[in-house]
Image (tube, rainbow, N blue to C red; front, side, top):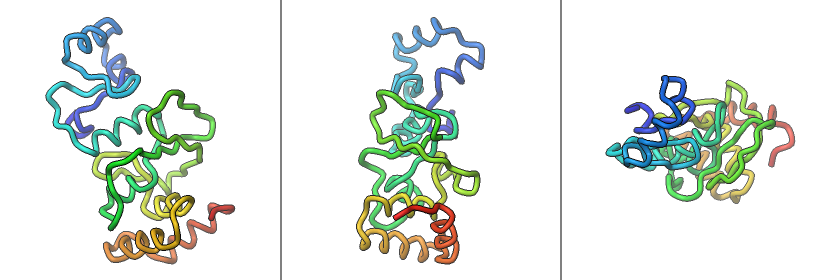
Length: 169
């Protein structure tokens, strides 16, 4: 659980042989804290921004990936903050009801997947392109320049990825 920022899902607990009544009992006694439906934090585990972001991704289910400003912040991109409402991409066939974060449906091929600071996220190229959907040119330029300066991004790779996405701002 240390690698998962002190988080575990209901499905993981059940797969390890815990019963539903065990889980409910642990929550009632304060050994587990429910962060989202089906996502728990081990009591006493350190609280971090990464933990909150991972909890949102776990709540969104398998193959979900953190996107947007928070994904850029995990990479250390200038001007990007870990705080705020996270955006999580889920497969097009998935619906996530009652989420306390932004859910967008979009295919995320293996080439766009990364794990950054223990959080399933988008690779930096795709994260920049997702931010470009809503951010102004100045913000996108800042993100691109910062990622290039950090050695995380090459313009050629970003251009190829944007061309493969097709209809994208």
